[in-house]
Image 1 (tube, rainbow, N blue to C red):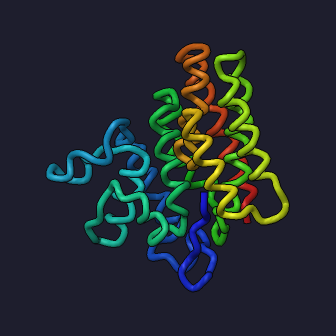
Image 2: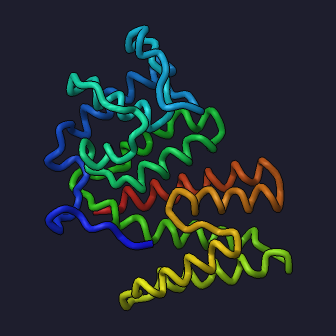
Length: 229
């Protein structure tokens, strides 16, 4: 739960002092889309057959776009590279990845471009984290019903309260919340929180509900990103 400090205490800003511009990044993603390169389940295949044959997930194609623009070779599965090349936090790259994998197929084909277009140049996207997590956790409460989920429900409420507090939450309070959360079968990072909410939806209803949960998360994330300065 601890928030990572940036080097020199400087806030990361999207597409600011980065090797690739938002415009060039989107141009490459459009080419990937035109070649039907967005594919679930892996970070990249077809390197040896040329870029016209390359296929990969949202993160894989995004990092391949960076590599093509800069004429370099980089890992297409290293989420931390979003920070170096795009000014986008690693945790957000993991969320983009998870949402892509669990959206309906047709919607997943547009997700990498929607994600990139939602980013404002100069935005501090770490500001999106807390409101997004609160939204996901509150969504969990819609599905966690009945005595069988009493512990999980109480944990979710406690974590929501910690995120909503105006004063600084101490490390010990977060550590206690993490211990209790794991004991209740809940994980709390941004990517895993998203996964957990959808899994709860799928467990209590069906696959259609799980997919709907990810569509809901995607819409909210894009809304928050568009508003973020």
